[in-house]
Image 1: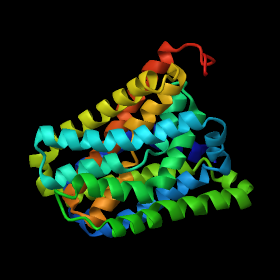
Image 2: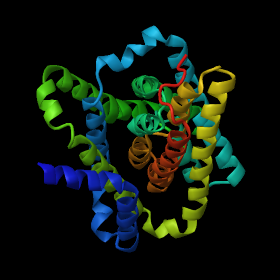
Image 3: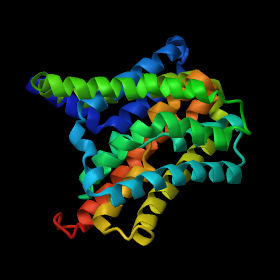
Image 4: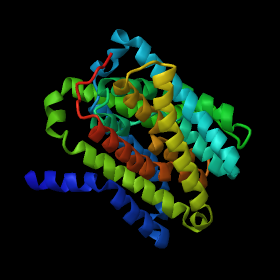
Amino acid sequence: MDFLKVIGTFITKYFPLWVIVFAALAFFVPGPFLGMGGAITYLLGIVMLGMGLTMSIDDFKLVLTRPKDVIFGIVIRYCIMPFIAFCVSKVLGLSPMLAAGLILVGCCPSGTASNVMTFISKGDTALSVTISSINTVLAPILTPALFMFLAGTLIPIDATALLLDILKVVIVPIVIGISLRAIASKAVNAVAGVVPVVSVLAIIAIITIVVALNAQKLSTVAGMAFLAVVLHNGLGLGAGYGISRTLGRMSHYKSKAVAFEIGMENSGLAVALAIAHLDPMAAIPGAIFSVWHNFSGSLLAGFWASRDADPQEEKA
């Protein structure tokens, strides 16, 4: 068991490295992965099940005790990132499919990575977990609606199909995970250490498949797509922190949580939806985002953690 724990830690710790290795493999030797596009939805379902296994009803209670903080975080989450994606797409002159893919990333909810980065940065982890949990629950309605509004002029969109897919690959697995944790907590706790490893492996597999499907096109669009993702992520992190400090009048402690909730996306969901409803090209921004936001988030979290020596700073 100790050996498996060491292997799991090694895999999760060097997540960006494994993504680069397998993405390079898929780019130069795409053949073995080309028939795996249909597996992306199921792989994302595994990631969402893992997220559900780490959640509980307590994750939603903060909305009752601190409704202002939670509602503020949710509102700016769904206002900022979709519109930043739209603006970046226009400024860079992205092709319709790349633009749609970037906008789709912005319209998706935040994921568990934001909670991890908030914890590392000594931010308000409870607030982060609550915002991301409620964002995910709201995603079946808000993600298709916002995507239709912003990208509907670029490509044809079936909002109903998007809604049903989000319910299928996000909400259902999360509900199953929460239910399993509630009725079989001992069994869930016994496998808790394996869940992050399985999720990381599933994300690596998703990115590998997306790169393979786009291997021929990547050489011409990768640079522009990478620039778009870096701008989208960086502007989101900055806007999340700045707006929560100024308009929301939140403390530094709370604003760190909001920054990660805004700037870090459930890009795996964007990839799955793009493959299912758009085009493999539209999945490229989500695949790049999956790697980049973990890198940029880790840098920012590490900076704040080293600067904010007192984790018990004012939280009001």
